[in-house]
Length: 63
Image 1 (cartoon, rainbow, N blue to C red):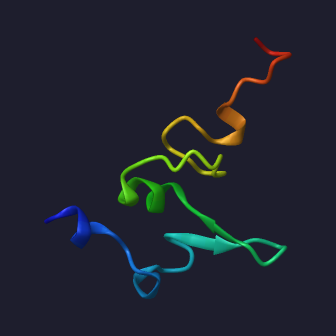
Image 2 (tube, helix red, strand yellow; image 1 turned 135 degrees about the vertical axis):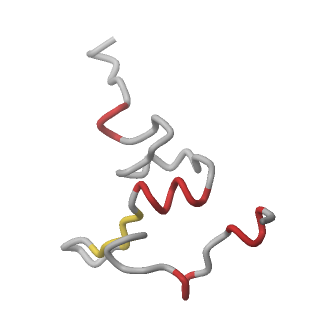
């Protein structure tokens, strides 16, 4: 399967598996979605499996 075929279109996303909608109405992508996408977008996503999630970053006071 090519990378193009692996990309998910919005119509193929399943709420509760690939994303959920938070209390403010924003779509929050899950770790499963990020893994299927296959790369880190460097946007500090909440469920980033590539080490860029907010809880995984080290603040200047922690280093």
